[in-house]
Length: 384
Image (tube, rainbow, N blue to C red):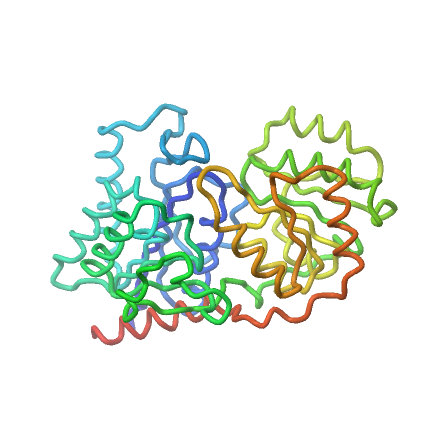
């Protein structure tokens, strides 16, 4: 029997969290026997790993100039043009036509990634016209960024109703329902399906690293230096001053910035590039200090680690702060606002985390990858 085929589209623009979350979903499809194609439109990420059994197609990459996401740049740093858009659309449709998936997932769109509608709307229209139309899904995290333009929400609803079978929400409504950040969710309630959060509990790497250490991380984007320098300065002010510290830097950070960090860090602080066994390190660390991206926070909850998070607050981003504050209300971690980040405030947050009881189990669903596959299978089977 021929394996079902799934094509997953993702466009990361600043950090790499979207790419890594979708890669976890792709691995789940492959693990369940699907012929899986992951199509990435962002900059190639050297930290992406574990895609054995998953086909990876790299589109001509684009990235955001800054956290406003208003200007997109190509791989040379030039602003993208209409010719570039036409070229990318042709490449994307060619990939789709060669693969002919039974299921198509677009990450975040139509609830985000509006700058990519030049290629996604034509692709969706093309898929809709096929005699054997694939089942089409939006793969979206639990919390959206601040919704300040009502017309965008109306567009999202119209596109979802026109082109999609369902929106797969990678969260738990018992923790934060989708309508918290998408007030019009009731209009599309029949298309909303919660999967639980995306955490690869079955694949936590075994490692001897990180035991009884303070781990400092900022994900895969080049946004970590303010947190890293604050952590280095907070170390002698904190209860963890005599413990080993390890700072995991993105390969996208500038080499001279990493060299300067090494210079000021001093002894007792290991500085290295982010590593694939980070989830395993979380399970045995003394404390995690990190940004508050979806992937890192969920891995931290799954590990039951003590944690301090500093949510990203650039541009219009509110997603990290909202999720982190809700988790802090449950006693699952400590939150320090990015605008309050300083050595003394970070040291105080570290001490609060270290002296608090170990967090209880998260009490929210963390089986989102496998549930995503199950839900997609249901829709595809209805078409056969």
